[in-house]
Image (cartoon, rainbow, N blue to C red; front, side, top):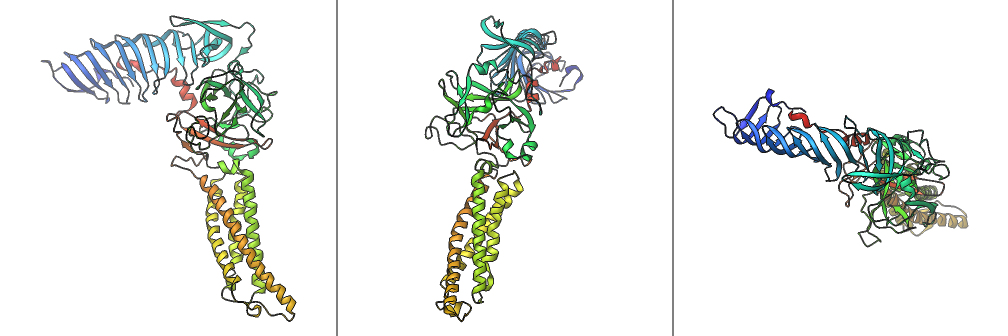
Length: 577
């Protein structure tokens, strides 16, 4: 928002001179709701002062003849800040910009509020773009470089407004007075901006990323039954980016609606987009441009997923170490489980929040299916035994309740629902299954009491069972009914166990806070070790090698396009012009 002091009414709090102009330390509030606190000399700002703008941003520094002069600090409404040099109220000279966490965003020069000369634009992931900006302050030219987080590996070539057009592998060799010098590999292939779509994973699927190729390789996993895994090609310290997770970009709706066997390599990018490495690109002979999808799960991981802005792939995820790793050590990530406190279960693992709403139905899909089948079997035994009891037992007040019959039907409900819930994400189905499991527990208690009472109800067969002229038949029938009642007890104990387990699985799948998104079934919870970036979790399952993915995903509060745009958008410095 621009502010024109000459055309706005103002309210002055403080001393005035003989012409009713602010003189001394005053607070001036403008009609736009902007406020200035500082020193005035006969109506002009002179000395230390600070603007408080209506949007929450501030601008402070030293004023000379009503204009900011020298070092000034502009603080954005989100807490980010720009430290720059002002001449006559405009940015002229060196400047540095920081995000709300204090991490550098920009370093370079300004002339008349426009970036100029050699500039550095930093990304939160540790990478940056450096080069001479054009007359509009854009990172456009044929001598611009994207520098990876190691500070040495780079892609040097042509960029337009910070976007890679054509570049080759280079190495940042020296840095003199803020100007980098690169050595370009003459044998390097050409790298271009190649952001994936919903139908195309990329135009150069077999062109490896040069940074990733220096740090990881794919080999047979040391985890039993996990197939291939990702290994460190060289030792690395904690907080080192090791690999990238690129793939086709699809929606959460598509992931939720299709069969889970197709979701073996999916990871959520943000609330709208899911990155997927579908068959046949899960094989390195068909796709090796990025290898992040090869990392397996561990309860004591050495890596985590982080957001990453890649010059070639765009907004993706990366795999970053959370502790030092050695050469040839397998890189693993936590797919979203609660960890033991640091030191109890191995290396210090980040305490990720609970997994998403459907974690157990997918990770333990076979177990849920078995639970459902066993629950239905117990309910079936209850119904059959109840039928035998109803047919051969004399009519009494107790037997006429037909408790085993209707209770058995109730007991079957959670088993049937568990079979369906294990195959498809559906919050209504999950909640219904939980309710039916609780009802089944009550039904189990009723049948258990019925079976106990009928087993001890009377001693003479003639008083309990229908009379039959043949004693042997009467004996067999009596033992059949007694056996049916005993079977009811066993079925009740089994059903009690299975219903409890189904209810437990369902309750563990419920959202743990009020930030549950019913649209895509995700919870957004903040990890204890990373209070800045929220974490989203998405469950997936691959049938082929029984590999399970339930990948924790960190994402920014804004959309990727907005985050990327914020890095190059100029702040409203001319609001005081």
